[in-house]
Structure formats: C-alpha cells, structure tokens
Amino acid sequence: MELHGDRYDEIRRQAGLSTSARYGPDHYRNLAARSARKRQAKNELRDSAIQHMLDDGWKIPTIINLTWEDLPGLDEYLENGLGEYLERERPDTDSAHLFVSCSGKPLGLANTYAVMKRYQERHEE
Image 1 (spheres, one colour):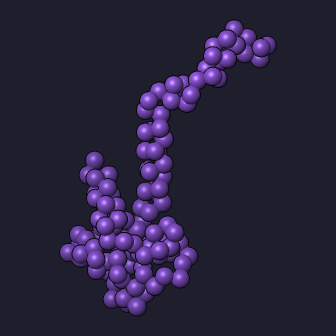
Image 2 (image 1 turned 90 degrees about the horizontal axis):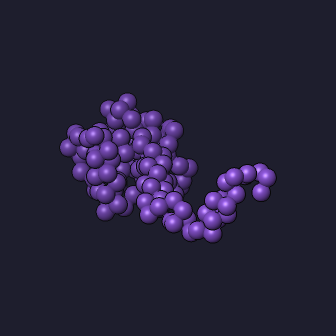
Image 3 (image 1 turned 120 degrees about the vertical axis):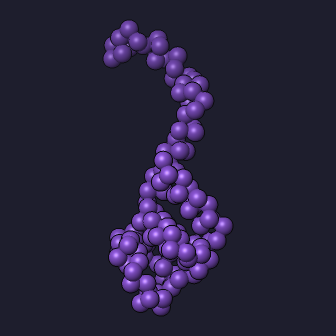
C-alpha cells in the first residue's frame, strides 16, 4: 500500500480486470499487427530479391523453384539483393531451394503470392 500511495485502490481494481477490459478491445489486434510486422521484417531481403525478379517478368512458380544449381545464371540478381539475402538472411537448411521460409522449408505457391502482395502493399505507401 505504501508503494502506490493514493493509487492503491485504483491499481487493486485494475488487477481484477481481464486484459481486454484493462487495455481495450484493440489490444490483441495491435499485438498481432506488431508481431506480423516483426515477422515480415525478418524476410525483407528475401521478399525484396523476389520483387526484383518479379519486376523483370519472372513468375512466382519459377522463382520459388530456383535451386543452388540455378545460381550461376542469376549474376544480375546477386547484385540486386539475392546475394545479400543468401548471405545474411537465409536460414541454415538442407533445402536445395534458394528461397525458403524462416523454418527452412521451400516456399509454397499460395503463401508466396500472399506474402508478395503484402510486401507490395507495404512499399506502395
């Protein structure tokens, strides 16, 4: 009681409230949005490299199926973000695919379309 002084009764009442009652209905939405932004930032180099390829006319199914064997033909992209992604952001994995998820698994087609749509929306702003 001495620690909080005059605010003791107010703090005691708040302690019994649920999180949504204490912080409001948008609390969980804000947490989820912040978490999504952090996850997306982890893949910024990958998504940027994919976007460069899309800008040059590549199709997503072709991009997500690229492997280490295809790397010698991608010199142009190594200088435009692909090299940085492979060096700094790509997780250690046994997958032969160049573009992988945070868990090291090859990217799926539907998920990649959704990820790239969100990436493009973020960079239009």
